[in-house]
Length: 441
Image 1 (cartoon, rainbow, N blue to C red):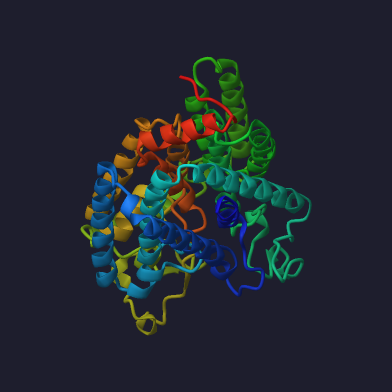
Image 2 (cartoon, rainbow, N blue to C red):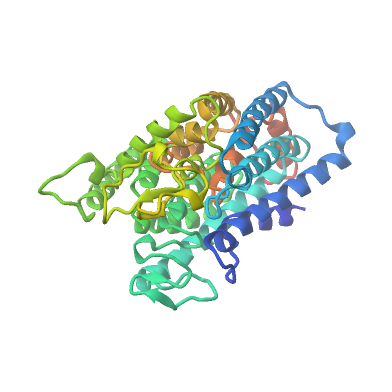
């Protein structure tokens, strides 16, 4: 069983379908499938020992909060102009209502599983770290040749800067994901997880060292500033105190890396602007505010930005200014004299805006309550520093978003926060009696 969990958690990071016909089928669906398998195994093990299971109070509160969020999400989905998109999620992002139901089941079942089988936490840590190592190794060849994407059409191009799999040269290195930003946040979360696992003695020093030696350079190669900032802040948080020299080095390295990446971006420095420095996030944020005003309570459905703005005006003909009143949601009825193209993103690139667009203000409040409760549990957990993973993820989502390719990693660490301290104390005692090591306070 330990080996099975190690394999499943590693596959949740690295599995792709090289023969897929879209980004979702290549990079998203395989990883989501593994989460379904993990939930299935969790439930099977819990059912076998259901009589021995004592459900803690914090788990029941978590269940209530998840139920509230999913209920509001269900209303948003039913009222959405595109309910199927809201239910299943957009192809690449994949985080529709069904996915969040899966994440709720994954988080809640894993908490209960570790109450009954706390020894499986080692396997889960190891699986994620092994997946992170493989992901890091997959990135280095892409620096040499951007056409490497590990798909069945690898090496083929449909344009000078576009792979046959639809990956743009500017999106490389992607590792085993559909965009370098997605790979970057996974590397950040794995690096922080490695440190947390080492502090808690859930991972061996050798495995931790190998993970950090490979993931940090691979992360820098992705040139994703928000992920690097997340790693920097979370590492400083974790290593504060007696590791102050390491903290100073990490902070300096992070600042230099982010500065170099910002200066080296293709910006018009004769007329610098926030929009340029923020990689054109600010126009999407402006559009998001307008979309929220149209449906403030329950939003547009999951992946709401893409639903609210399914088409934008052709920027070669008119400015990218979208008024919802200009559009109907029957594509056939779009005015023929307006030249349009599909919107290039389904996300507003900000967690608060994306959540509000998707499930409205009520859904945002439910999501904040859910996150807030789990973070509070993490801060009071007997496992040192697990909240650092959540910190890194939240920093990343200030300019990025949730996605079915990686969101489960953050919720996995939060699932540990809902495990009673007594379960890990019992595990520590078991490890001590087996002669492997003794926990000391």
